[in-house]
Length: 130
Image 1: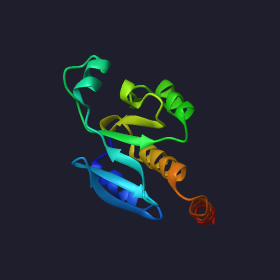
Image 2: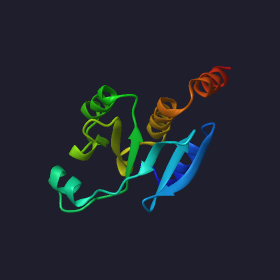
Image 3: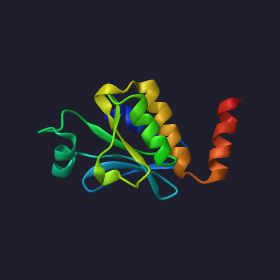
Image 4: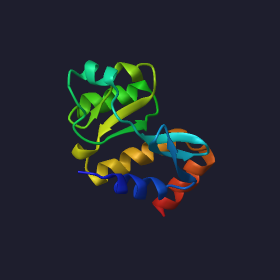
């Protein structure tokens, strides 16, 4: 089970990342582009999911493309999900109560890499492999 403190620590450990607030929730950006953010479920989301209320914290994370989003949801629907609001948009929703810190770190690094400048990504992963 991951927490918002885990999200903050892992996101801010990635180069060029900053934290801010958007629509009342936490948002992490790289080079001005949001890659993960707090995403409370809206009424239309709850209706689409067939639930009455949000059960725990929900994170939205950018993905490289829609195929990656669909693969994550198919691979582990207990952790990853989407709603019609995100149709056509490369981002997946994440049940923070259901994801491990390790997997969260991988997801955040992938989301970051999908939005960071290519030179920054190359430099970061070159240093990681050293």
